[in-house]
Image (cartoon, rainbow, N blue to C red):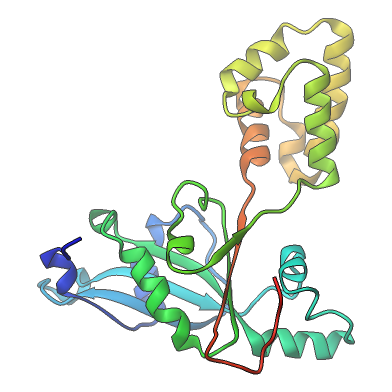
Amino acid sequence: MKQCSVCEQIKIVPGGFDDYRQLAHYHYRESRPGPFKKIFVLRNESAGPARTRTIGVIVYSMPSPRLELRGAVTDNFFSGFDRNTQLELINRSIRCISRLIIEPRFRGLGLAKRLVQQTMPEMNVPIIEAMAVMGRINPFLEKAGMRPFTSKPSQRFAQFIEALSIIGIEDKDLIEPQKVQRRLSRLNDEKNEFIEREIKRFLKGYGRRRNMPPGLERTRFILSRLNAKPVYYIWFNESISNFKVSI
């Protein structure tokens, strides 16, 4: 496909936290990323004022010390050490894509893929990883060369999904809050008492949310949690030969 004229004017350059803050309000997470190691930005060289030139940003941060899927994907390469040695090895070997934002007017041009694909090698570590809730909807990380992996639901999630199935609410219904709420409102006393116990057990880990009253708002929140299964992405830097792993 022929590259658009706008894309030809867009360059990837090192950036800073001010670049991230300029675009942060476009990201679905309200919290700021943890301590970052490097930031790269997309700059539109044809734009006028400097404040309009930053149209994309990627933030690389230090990795989480524990990720279940990392162990499975790397054949537990980082396991079997004492805590300090393990942390040192993880911090030396991995960087995490903690934020990636494209200004809305420039989405759909393949810029997210380009930003990931061209900056991962610049980090000079064996592994780049990312967790993305929207991975199934917009697989730009996969298109950039990262490999996706999903985990099985936790025991708490699996138990609650089973409870919903008992009262006639199946997996295929979990994307329709109104439909689920209608079914909940029509339960007889015995089934309603049962599912209310299960709902309270499920909501225990969500702070003040555990006291939400029955209704559509609570149902929407529960389904948002059940459907928010992030995809784990990993990329291996083949140019660094001192890291061996089998997938």
